[in-house]
Length: 450
Image 1 (cartoon, one colour):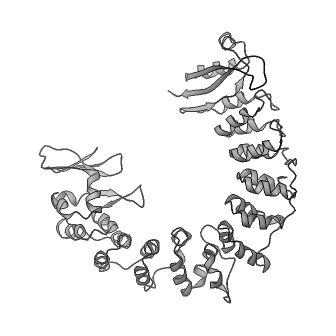
Image 2 (image 1 turned 180 degrees about the vertical axis):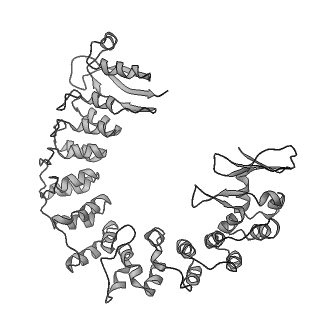
Image 3 (image 1 turned 135 degrees about the vertical axis):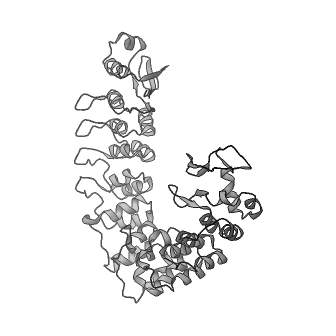
């Protein structure tokens, strides 16, 4: 733990925790833990703050709660926490100056006295307005809006949507509806807000989301229907991204409505159907719905992949289980001869790897290059310390030692790299796997780089 120490010939440096601290010296007068300083400021504990020498206080910088890379002065920290007593003490006794950041942080701390003091030196800017919105302080917000120098176009979705500030949306909307058009899709209650208004529904925010996209990701079915019925938006093969968005955010009411607008077995440029989309984002409910509406589970993509390949790459365990129950071939090979197990190993999907093996995935299956799942596991190892779940394989300890097994060359190659490899081997009964012989389960390879 770093300590603050007062002494003659003060020297400051930076600690690993990103906070400035004082090195120890020869003439120690008092000592206080650095992480206690912020707590004193937070609680506006003026009596204990006064116990620290002013020349020390004036040099302290604390964590910036808004940006972990930067630090802020102790006066700025007082503004952030709204600690009035400490703020004015430091201002009077510690040679502290009010900065633009003090004003900005004061709109978070919401101390009227600190705000008014800072306003003597600076005018509110866009950050002050943003912090007022984020803290739901509408008096401060109205005050900021009086300054025409603030560019309201710099208000972003995180300020309104991220902090769920509906009232701020109405305030800004009454000033200029174009400012908040996209965000109306996030709040269902705003549907009547744009009635009889000349609205640019194509306007997007900093995330390139329009009002329609926000309606989709909030499962706002009524608004989505309004846009489609009014021909403001359309759904066809060229903009399936809307449907995929509904799948991804699990907005199933909207997704099911959108599905009715498509040929359920229609393919995109990759040869993938809507069922593939459901597989990518692990949406079992939509997959069931698609099958109930006649989706063909046997359709393959242009790469000759089935939905299990797609789900294995995405680590979607629940939907993999669903497809297996639908009797989808767990060992089906794509154009490159890869099974879902190959795919899962290539993407380091540990849970999927284990689940596929438990459900009789072929651990000896070879792709077009003759590679088995074990080859893939070894090829995708890393120099840093990591653990890999390796497949059940027909191999004995003696075969590894005698180097007669085809995989032994790969193991020797790893050893030549001077990596510390620990093989945890366990004999298990293969009745579960419908085999007569005992196999060995190499569970993990731990590679420790030196």
